[in-house]
Amino acid sequence: MLEEETGKIIDELGISFNKLNNKLSNLLEENQYLKQLIADLEKEKKEKDLQIANYKIKIQNAHFLQDRLEKEKNEEIKLLKNSLKEKDNLLTNYEIKIQNTQQDHIEKPTNFPLINNNNKRLFKDESASNKIKSNIRIVVGLDFGTKYSLFSYCHIGGNKNIHTNDIWHGKVGQLRTNTVLQYDEKYKNVKLWGAPALAKTRSTKDDKLVELFNLHLSDLPDNLKPKLPFNYKKAITDYLREIGKVIITKIKTDWPFINFFKDVLLVITIPTVYTENAKEVVRKCAYKAGLLVDEPNLQFITESEAAAAHCIENIPEAKTLRSGTNFMVVNCGDAIDLSFHHLNDKRLSEIILRTSSIRKSSLTSLIEAEFIKYLRKKLGDDPIELLKNNNYGQMQNMIQQFCNHVKIHFTGDSNFSYELDIQDTIPILTKYITDKKIEKKLEKDEWIIKIDFRRMMIIFEPIIQKIFNLINDQLYKTQKICAAMFLVGSLSESKYLLNRFREEFHDQVKIISVPIQPTTSITRGAVTYGLSMFTK
Image (cartoon, rainbow, N blue to C red):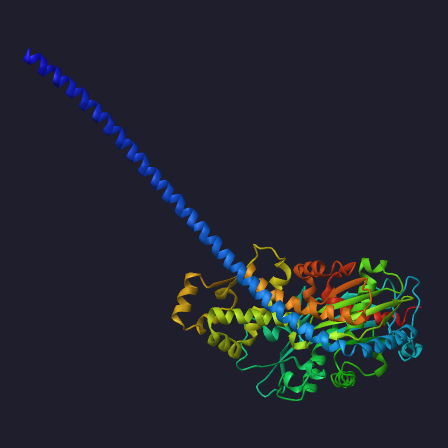
């Protein structure tokens, strides 16, 4: 009996043990599941935290950019308001001047005509064309710019197809060359000129570069003009001599029987902001350079007039403009120049005073300055100063590569990225970096400096706002409807710039367009002016 009870108790204990064991097993499994769940949740939490951190960084960057742009915008608005307040006090005088200017230009159109569909000459003063010898066969338009120069040419007969020279220093495909001279140590003889003077492989430690000398023709204060080791007229003469050799060779190659000094009309463009005396200086320098022997074979035209003529003749949308309409030409080249024009019976009459920024603060120059500022921040001041003093040509080559890339590839896409490979583009710079912390960081990045969309916006937008302020100021002064806006100059090749113009002014201006090869607009317009003198 006792054995039966004991066995029964043992069986019951075994059953209870099995149940407890099963429960324990289930609890262990549940605990393991909970641990895995907790681990998964913690992992998911870390991922979420990382995403939140990234979002916070993006938000901070966005706020930083927004604050920066807002601050600069407010500063520009403040300056604009002050300017407008000052101009309001003179509004009566402006209106009188505008009315007088309108009357003068409507009755007496500007001294260059456009070639109309009937191929008839349209002159304000026939004596201007009478001074030109009747045996002229070729017209050459020279855009003698502050930073770059180029020329176009055309025979007065045939289809009058204007061509722009694209062979410089033995290389094909470039439409312009730098307005730079490289002298020997005594600044007596020119060793190199144009692009070769700024070649990537050259050092300027022993060679002497002279540039921006054209600014001495302007009415800028002397403290804004570059300091030169000699009189600026020598630099102008030397440069005209060198580029003149290219022009003469090109014309004689294409037309072997042409006498350049008798059969060619040279039309030189003069920046709008240059003084009237600048023409006489350039004229004398051209003679001294051996580019001319007979005065009637030289004519001058302002850059704004030349650009306007080219746009009216070559932009399809311009063909829709009717007599009596107004349009604006925005030159984003060596300078930021604006000119407001009026079409009157197929004659081009300028009715408003032109507006121009300081020529040393062109759009290109400002972009270059922001680029160098960014490099100073990344590399330090000393390496950039050493590069500037010892390898100026290489530095300019690096800057030009950046500007060309930005001009062509930056469209406002947030995925934009530009990589400056120091070892490939400008290896000498690696020797000037002595800060171990900066050097270590660059080695980690394989000596590549990246410029992303955010940085490009910081560089580009404040500059564009300056242009917009100039345009709005001129539209305010004219109080006239602007039917079209044409962009010319090298930076007008930028798709981003064109898009920003259309965003900003689409409510005010019906047509906003850029001619094909806007870099050549001024020089081709100069040829158009010259051809009109011989159109029967």
